[in-house]
Length: 548
Image (cartoon, rainbow, N blue to C red):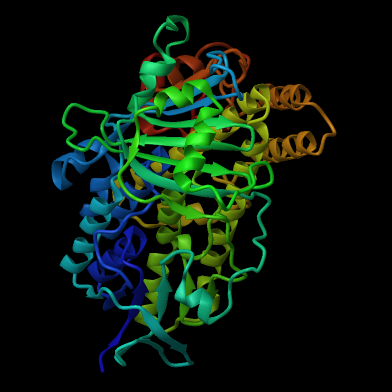
């Protein structure tokens, strides 16, 4: 029997990317999945700026150019097919029961780049990545439910119902909630450690009215910088939200589909077992007049996928000869679309360690301790952010402050990784990436900054105080805006400090103007994280403010 270096459980995007990287760099890999492609998934449909940079960095660092395909809409539609949507922004519209949406209570984050990002149609992207893994030499078994999983001091044995078995020196589980490895070692926490609680249902629909027909028409004074239909939109309300991720928002589309789902706090929206998913969605959208209009002609194309408890967590994600990563390790909520970028960052720190382990024949848990630390920390960070957001949905002023802290976090984390990749492309020295692991606060996306740690912690504290009835939403919002104003690492004139500015746009020219706007803030740590092209613009304009 052949003994593989690594068996990867799960042939979705995570398993296929990891398998491709390992095989491309000399490891023997077997990918096993209980199902076959194409497969449906609701996670990782919206590519955030951080995800795009992390995927590009994976592609360059580990010599797998196919991963870079996912980083832009043009790449996806040119290389894979035209089933993808374009993602130019993140839009959030707050709704109150029985009332039209108030155009003063909405936000849009636009992060401009040279090329637009994509809404990923996961059946196609996952199949593409799986084929890439095969191209680089991964062996595969699909439709192979695992009935046996044994790990001893020398090897891993994975077996199926037909009596066959495979051996490897290490196993990495990327499957998801029903992780065979988590079940075999009883790794799931009986009650997830997270503060956040939600239940969810999702599907793909047709005939979803473009949001601009509902939320822009007749409201010229409140028109967003980018049309709503050109990005990922969250319709938020007390205790939950509806997401809309269109695949039909560009001229070349042949899809007509939108990914639509709801996520609800069961403490505020308890499930009625007698109500079907179709009925619950209709009842929920009927509470909000404008949402009802957007979905008045929408038709689901498949049965709703439902879960009564979205979050789950694991006591451990690393052991001798085994690892859980991505959605196999845990999950919090689809809000903010963090799972793809978080998983890409975990693959960054795991892949080079696995390749060295193959060479050294040492798969002890100790050498993967940072993977454990990072994977668990990212889940906890997502919990802090999502639980704070859910709390703030009850009060727009508070959400408006949380929105800015999230935007700052996203900008800084994206730029931090982008700078490492730029340096790596110049000299191909891997130390630029490994240096990112030397941080004080891996729980944060901006993990090496004391000031941001304090600001993020203040967000969590104020939201929890509001949720506990200790202060009003207005008081919590005022405290957070005061903290944002006092945060010397946030540049002026990027709208972060102005509660009345609902739209935040991050483009090189805007940041350059902001950093040169005046003497109020003179030494921004955030400036050092800006991509090289932004710093070039600042220098070209002759700004006197130090930028390095």
